Image (cartoon, rainbow over all chains, first blue to last red; front, top):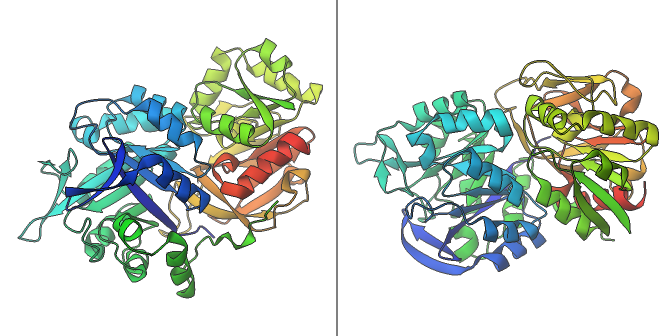
Length: 259
Length: 205
């Protein structure tokens, strides 16, 4: 059976890992490489590494550092930030990235998704959608690391991205980000119900039960989280043990052979 | 040490495979010419992307015949993901296209049985061993490996199926015919067990 994935998200800014609240008030967490090494050693299911400054600084991904990071990783790594066209996707894949997360560029040119899917295959194209809930309860997609409104509705946008060939949706609630108050289950469910590609829930995980809800009620295929791993004692393995006790399929590393 | 030729035909993933070979006591050599294929001990055909683009790129590099001749030369070759699919006769991704035809069979899209089976099939899923093979040395039956794909290879002759995975029913995840091996998952991204499999290919086959 396909396992539920628990994915640590590493936000990368000025050579270090940071974490904020609501895409703001960034706190330094530590350098990138040791964090990647620890997660790799612990055999987490997957890692998402997002360069959150690249687009706003109007620069390309830092291919050199990324290929160094990939060298340390024998587990799946999704890379995002600063992707503008097929050339940058190709360079990232060649640097060792397994999946590419595209966010802002898709609003400017939705065909970047179809082009990338046609050439590289849908399976490695992740469309990242950052969503803000307004005071009236309506949802809107934001780009450029949550700074610019797009006027797009997340449900419609996710459907459009699926039809363009995206292989996965990384769905982040800006309001919940860094609050550790739980995922926006309503948002996750509204998207996962109308598309047939996997949805990665993101933004708000504070305890294992939040993740359980994102999977069981939100129908997400995977849960991404950052603060819970940076600022609490919880590990991805403990969360998986919790999910296993609730009969969700997870990958425990029990059958690993030590040679 | 064993010289492992990694065929670079512009379909991504080269560095991960190179690192994995290095970590597992092999000498990785990135190759894309007929002469280079003749100069290595074993070959890995990686691949991320569509069947159509993959086979077109191999054609452009004049690599179809050199790779086919590996079969008669009995050099071990391991196809990974798209690389496994390209070993077959036909592929349906990006129109119907001919593959290398080293193992007879067709690559088709996975068909979900309900909305809980999402396509692409992304993540960790088990490989059930159908037939023992040195590739599985030290790997327990039912171990999880990392998959990321929408299409799967269906060999005509089930004798060549040595591993299967439960998704959209059951699909073939490991094939073996003489010196030709193929895995649908990514051993280079499957942690310790994936590393053991790459080590098996390098040092036990």
